[in-house]
Length: 296
Image (cartoon, rainbow, N blue to C red; front, top):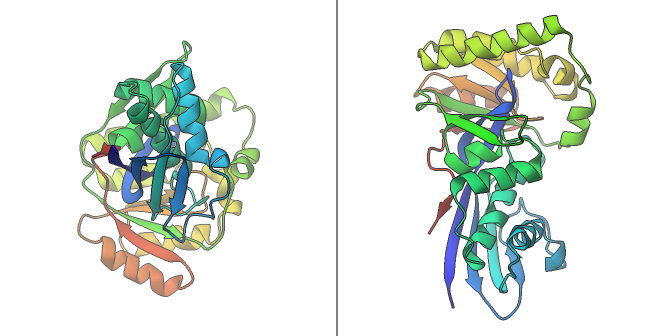
């Protein structure tokens, strides 16, 4: 019986002004041990994963089946043992990690020989935007765009010399609700200003000017002003993290988690200080995941 493992990192999208186009992979992971079997079976071994009922209703199975069907292939049955330290519905890309896992199961079991670009395109087709899929696939900080021909293009930035601190509340926020508060249209002036902020943010990262990058990541005009009221302790977290030395703090994805860029080596110190202010939060000092999707 053939067996293999799949590991996919969590991801934080938007990073302030990079709305629907910028994402960062971090070292929380979804892991699957897949073994060909006589029948389909999913087993969850993590408190962050819900109970398994019918395998046909399992999200990862649905993605795998859909991916195989795109190539007119059938899936041979497998037993899938799943563990995860990515919290669900917290803005850390749990859905995208599962999407990539399903695509990769189909790729392996149905012998699809998918390229990385095809995996990115399939994942983007499912998610509707590439900002979580791209970093989960490639690792690191990735800028991606869907052009008018519906192709997805991406660039991975050089290594980010910053620690990451995430502030995870014990509440969920569905992406649909977070998108529902956004305006349908932006004026030309708003779009111009918001795009300029995003451009300076990326330029500052490329120039290793993390102080400026931190200022720009907190100046978003596309989504943060509209979502701030949905995020518990939004201003407290921003202001306190800055006081303790963070470059900048923004909503992770659609929230409710918030993510801070902090000086290299200071992650655990700043996380510990934030835990004293928010004892009911799960606050983690993380690193950027540079590997992305991994199959063994």
